[in-house]
Length: 309
Image 1 (cartoon, rainbow, N blue to C red):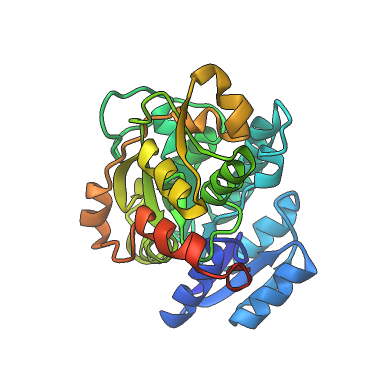
Image 2 (tube, one colour):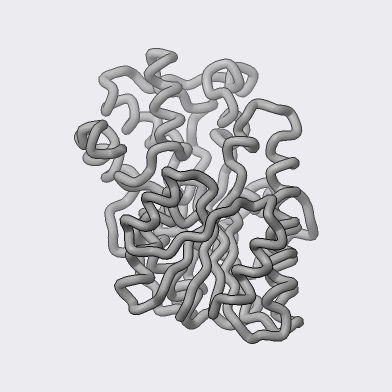
């Protein structure tokens, strides 16, 4: 299959490209910089220059492909500190999603897009979120719903909701490195209150396999959960970071969360237990790589920094 992928040189994309190539697929990766283009070429992918604002280019690339995987998101805008950064990034994502969907309508081709399990936490379900749970609308949710709706327009569409922590030696800028940097700056690893709120997690290599399986076999109009561990108490995460840095883990109040956890203040308080039972059953997917706490013990602190760049 000739696969067009946005975000192909990013964290998950850097694992997905070799996963797809090893399975016999041809990969065309979107690259907005020379560095990204070089990384893709070195990995064995073809390069298409452009970005998420080039809607005509996205339509053209999608139409020429046998399937599309959409990983890219303007994370730098979302995390810029601007009060409307996330909403603006989500609006860009929706426009890109609709452009790709327009090009694929009526083709029967697969389109695998990306969302997050954290959106379910804001719904306060009071239980582990499942693939059947859906929200009416909002930033990023609108993109998710738009992709699912494409199933009614002749697209084999699916959405992978990723855990907030996708971890491995390939993770350089995600939530875990950010928490580590904040702990190093603060002199302690912070958790809010008793830290009993839970975060799901997934290894990067397991996420790459999930995207490939979704591309190849997911039914039209399904939501899939990229979750290897259903919920790890945030205090356990903070304590593992503390051990890695040789500093204490410390409880802080909700009022002080912004001071010590910055842009992650809200996310650090989310209780986001999430099931992936249906995803595993539908696709025959089984996460096999180490869990988050194991990676915190081995990868994030024992792997030389130079080897993680």
